[in-house]
Image: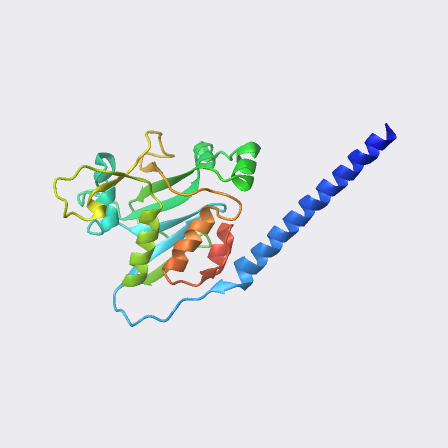
Length: 246
């Protein structure tokens, strides 16, 4: 029995050391990649036109908020959904669209301000898990504060950001009579039947998997990198993103 106890104690100690080392390595990775090692913007030719967007956070999760411009290909694809098309009608006073990418379990268990279960958190962190896109329509302009930062993008930068958002949605190909139509006119985003958190937000199928090294905030951070903004190299937390927008 004593030998079994010794083996068990050794196993526990070894497991504890491995866990402690893994946590320490991850925290060092966050510190270096999130705060010290940055992705700096490139110099672009002067462009008079600038588009304002916002990066928002609830403390854990971040979203990209973009102006509703129905003439862009992203909103043209979005408007193919009969439910969402009503929000894009110019007669309705919706000005902004918030877009986020995240873990399916987190989204499903976050209704009414609830926090996901421990098992869902562990599954999201340790195993690649399914994801969803979440969109929410805003009527009013946003107010800047510590959890809401405004950014001005040049047209080229904004187009790159829209491409990042668009490519994150799963799409279904529609039948088209004209073979000359471009791909954006032949595809449709896949909206889920489940309800959102309010009367003006919806879920869609998404591409990619959520895990410890690519979180919802990593998705936002990647969009900012593609939009030529100063960002972290590694941003698992919302505060890592906001830190570079101050």
